[in-house]
Image (cartoon, rainbow, N blue to C red):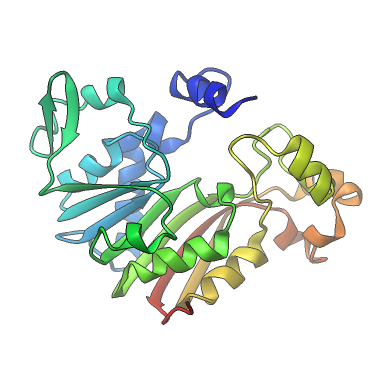
Length: 263
């Protein structure tokens, strides 16, 4: 469907399923905090960048509420969710303000960063951050390597990344169906408006290891039975021969010690 129609449905939660940050932003914020804490990392006073925040301030203000020092909300498009952002007042009035019926972030707490993160002009708009976070964003990127390098350039020397990535076909009833089509058929006929890049676990591992000295990828979910049912139809470029790898559907990426990036 046309992108404008898809975004209309997503905003109203019709047909298209929104992610955790939209359906339960407090749970999403808590998952970030708890996961980082389990690795000995505190958000207290840190500069946080939420990559692909989707126009909603909810996760950002909740992280501030839990001790973050400053939050950068980053998205390629300016698509603010006015109605749901209004719902955040007055609980988060320390971080948001109302002006002529619109909710705006307080600049001392929140920075909005809109545009292509690979653009040097965009990168220069913000200081380096201590933590970069995302949920169900990476699988939609059309230039995973380039965007990861750009985000790494924005990361402080002691900074970390935490990304939750969904490797399923987003017609979730058939989680591996997208892997059965050629690049041409997928690109021109079947790839959804949101773009699914069809990256698999080894692809993400290579991408992050090219940008960070330390990379830990935890498998959150694998669907071996479902993969076995379609293995014969899955194209060879998506198979390693190890079902425990090929059947992975959800991963958690922790990356630290960013490397000097190539221009």
